[in-house]
Image (cartoon, rainbow, N blue to C red):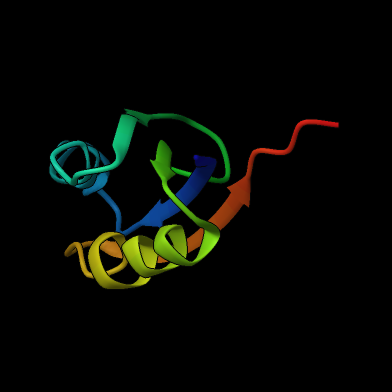
Length: 77
């Protein structure tokens, strides 16, 4: 199982709607509105890195109101 944080920038005023929509995507553990350089932070999981990438590109980035994403896989050092 691979987990990652997805940092999301949204259009002005869209953070809550984006977080709510993303929270319903299978594989999303949590989606929160935040302040700072990003508007929404998501914790997600998938079976493989490839599956995670497909989820981000095919599902997350298609949500209306998102302008940019940054995916940060969790590593165990």
